[in-house]
Amino acid sequence: MITTPGSLMLIDAASMYFRAFYGVPTSITAPDGTPINAVRGFLDMTSTLITRFRPRRLVACLDEDWRPAWRVALVPSYKAHRVAGAPDEEEIPDELSPQVPVLLEVLAAVGIASVGAADYEADDVIGTLATRGPGPVDVVTGDRDLIQLIDDTSGVRVLYTGRGVAKLEEMDAAAVRAKYGVEPSQYADFATLRGDPSDGLPGVAGIGEKTAAGLLGRFGDLTGLLAAVDARNAALPASSWKRLDAAREYLAVAPDVVRVARNVPIPPVTDALPSTPVDPERVEALAERWGLESAIGRLTKALSGT
Image 1 (cartoon, rainbow, N blue to C red):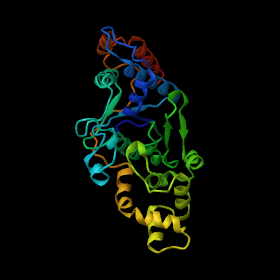
Image 2 (image 1 turned 180 degrees about the horizontal axis):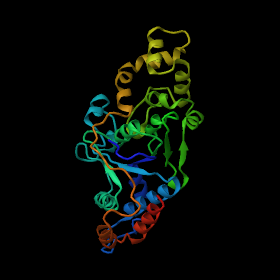
Image 3 (image 1 turned 45 degrees about the vertical axis):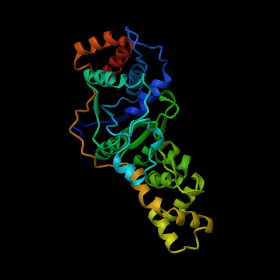
Image 4 (image 1 turned 120 degrees about the vertical axis):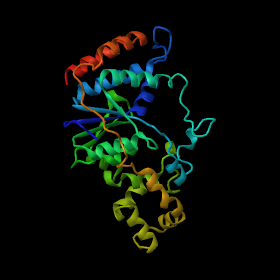
């Protein structure tokens, strides 16, 4: 439930703190020597985003379950390569894990909302909040799956951070067409066909991006494409027919894994960006404890402009 009107920014928090961790040296530490590079980087990225785009509302969206059982049940290989030794334990660098609670504590003290949902990924939280709106909505992520949320009519765009926040791509429907040859509404089917090794999704053997885009351009969506397979439609090349026919079992379940959920039960969240920290004493204590005075100062300055 979004409680404050105005432009909304939804940050894929895990995507951004992983990028911060690998982009900022671990030599950035707290006074006691504890690495604090991911927190520092995340706060600086957030300051940059707020200064550049001036959202009135902002939510850091969390992975309460980075590999939901219901997705794994459909496609067992889903993110399987990211599992460490224990079942369903994501392989997170030892120096990063302790920083996440610190980051969330700092955000709460400043007054920036964070929210997740049991049994769902951050993508699903973002999908739900973006769908509820109201727009305009900026989705900040390095995950291509969220391209499917882009909707010019509703004012939803993606600020893609694949090359970093300083070089982010502002993606609308035209950008998706230019880059992938499909509409945003076709992107989930496109990703299903193409596959995604980073998520453990095999795709359809022999069908890459160009072929997937061409098939969807001709048949509209996966439903129309499978109908053409069933009908042995003459417009469907024989090679593609064989590949799609052999992948029926995968194609029956993969779309529900790839599509972002848009009706996640999310508790009410106060998403208005404050112009000053809501708990200044706590902010000061955290800044001193973790050596974040400069980063928090930059964030406070960015907020003062909202």
